[in-house]
Amino acid sequence: MDTQHSRQACARHHAPRRRAAGGLAVAAACLLCGPALAADEMVIRTMGPISYVCGGIAADEQLALAAQQKNFSMGVLFTQGERGEYLADVAVRVMREGHEVASFTASGPKCLIKAPQGSYNIEATYKGQARSVTVSTGTYNAQLRW
Figure 1 (cartoon, rainbow, N blue to C red):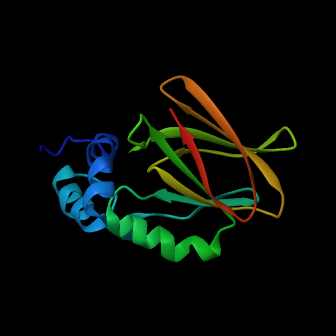
Figure 2 (figure 1 turned 180 degrees about the vertical axis):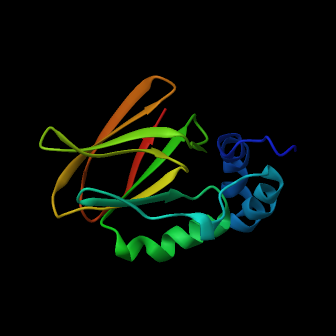
């Protein structure tokens, strides 16, 4: 694969292998994907009362996010298709009581969010198609699928 291969294409390509062969196969395969974001490059960002980090395409990122989960209060996963192919570059808005409290572009399929106790509506748009899910703090397995 050439170095122009996107994280998103890598995520779509390797998601079925993640289920079939486990995380190590994904890590090895994603090494071929060029500029995929390494676990040590995942950055926690803050916007108002919300902090978040996204990633999780490669196995090392999945492990890094799993280790960080205790420091966050919610998690959401972005996928598409029947096989649950991972998505990146998803526009995300975190809403509370009808007001936007954060917006960002997810650099990987899994986003961990640290927010004050309560219920939030996660609105996400991928290729012009919007999806939303209501998530309460303490929920880490919310999923939006296109």
